Image (cartoon, rainbow, N blue to C red):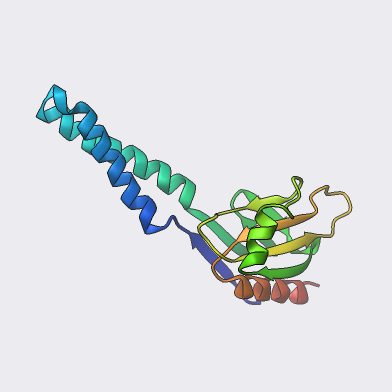
Length: 150
C-alpha cells in the first residue's frame, strides 16, 4: 500500500498580505499614539495570520482505506477512476464544468488537482475535486489502496 499525505498551505504572498493588514491597522491607530499603533500592528498582523492559516492549512491523506480531504472522509470503495487535472482542465473543472453537487476541496492558488468519480449509487455527489500539488502521487495512492482491498 502506498501512503499519501499532503498539507496544503497558503502561498507566501498571503503571509505578506497579513503583515500589510497589520501595517494598515497601525496607520489607522496612529493618531491615538505609539502604544495603540504598536497594538494595531501586532493585533492586526496576528488576526490576519490566524485567518490565513485557518483557510490555507488543509490536509489531503489516503489513510485506513479512505480519502481524507479536509473535512470529508470518503471510503476508497466508493471512488471510481481518478483524473489528473493540469493547466486549463483544472481551471475548467473549477468554473464552467463544475457540478454544484460535487465535493470540492478547492484552493485556487494550487494549479493542479485530482478529480475522482463517486461510484456509490446512494451518494448524490458525482465526483470529488481535490486541489493537490502532486495529483499523480495521490492517484497512485488511491489505486494502490483499491488494489490491496479484499
